Amino acid sequence: MNSVVPTEPGGLPARSSGWLRIVSLSLALAALAAPAAFAGVEFVTPIGNCTNKVDTIGDGKDLFLTAGSVQFEVFGNSVDLSNPTSGFRIATDSGTGTATAKIIQQRSGATNLGRGCGNTGSAVVQVDSDPGITSNIQRSLFFRMPLGDESRLQMTIRAIPTFAATWTSLQNNVSCIVKTGSFEKLDQDHKIRITLPPGSAQDQTTCNQNTLQVHIAPATGLGEIDVAAPVKFTATGLPNFMTANSPTAPTPASPTDIVFTLNVSGIRSLTAVSTSNIVVTSSNPHRTANLTFEVHPGIANGFTQAANCNNPLTGKSVKAGDLVQCELHLSLPPGNGQLITFQGVDRLCFAAGAPGVTYFASTGVGTTTLSGSGLIFQVPLRVQGGSMSTGQSCSSVTGVQQTVKFWVGQRDIESGADFTQDSIRIVNPQ
Image 1 (cartoon, rainbow, N blue to C red):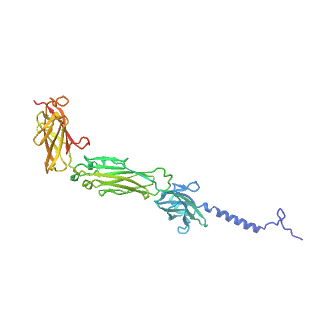
Image 2: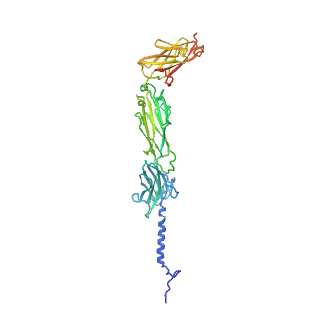
Image 3: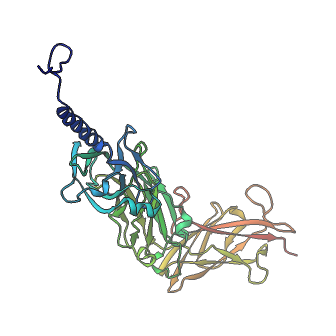
């Protein structure tokens, strides 16, 4: 009896069941192996926070880092099985700049389950990139999976941005240093000029207002940041009487402030103008901002207090024809002589009060020369009861207020040179 060989449509011999089993097994193995590359990296979180997903695989974007040293945690099935030495690598996608990566800790799914992070393995990764890059670069991390394939995490490393630095302090911040001097902010707040009061080198008073502040404002438009490296700012070019803190901003987009502390005795002892060109630099040495700090010492003589004019018996109310003693406080002893110029605001209401004091009623200006080793001096003037230059009376029953001004050296109204002044009331004699 002849056997019948099974055939398939078209007359071809039918395949044996054994061959079909081999094909079925091959397809099954391929089906198991194919998803492995997609079962690796799932999402990324900051260190210590497994619920804040800053990047998720398949979301259509890179993981955005900032230049410098950053750490983050990569979660995914089998990520904890990646070999940190031979099964993990970083590759260059685009851009020039050094970047390295390493796995510094691995956690199994069971460990993460105990942390409340789900039964998913993870690896803590540290990426170190050159903080001096000036444009963004792209890199990829590859994790080796158990079956030999790799799971890829794409990254963009953003350059630390430029920033602006401006002085924000006011005179009140250094009021006990400036005192009767001046405090100016110039060049759109990029420069401070301090003029110390006369005799500043002799000033030994306690001073606690001795700090100045600079505000750091990073440029806008840095873009999205998932994991940031802190940015440290330093200041160089400081004078020897100034120190600065070196603040750290939590991210390159965060503003911060630099506090400069002045050595009070050091700044007071200046004998020549001090001009400092200060350079503020971030963690990126290519990102800098320039500031200027200028100090003019008070090496000339001057007044340390306001003038105080009184009659020894009647105080501020002075009878016409009587004397007033105007007390002046100098910053330096006048030695062999210091010219003092004074002016009666109404020229006809004052006169010289003693030899050595000259006064010209035609101009209202007088002079005297102070000598000696002291700092406190009396300038005698005599008040008048006639008519003022305006035709009104210099005095009255209740008193008419009259003012006298004093300058160290020549009177210099045009330049606005510092002067001191005081007022008394001239009353009619009874």
